[in-house]
Length: 132
Image (cartoon, rainbow, N blue to C red):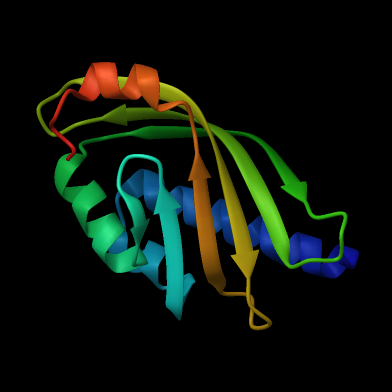
């Protein structure tokens, strides 16, 4: 992957995280290709629009702190974001955790696959069954 592509992907990820933090479902979904899929540790494989609508319905004001970005060293259109997510739910409860999102981009720079990675044990304890 050349440095220009890495910069484009890094900016797309920053844009994604800002929209996610605002709860901007339309803005987040616009970053995905029409055939994109994503994996959530809590919900499994989902279409982006369905996942982000469900997340927005469950969420209040959340804060995302970007810790680092990583680019593929294998020549793939892949990059990852490592961030801290202080997630507030609509009932006011909070769950905070570190997360890694792995983005695969298509040739147009849209997200075609996203894998969300985090330890679900502390999150399940904090959420109970509210996000099933």
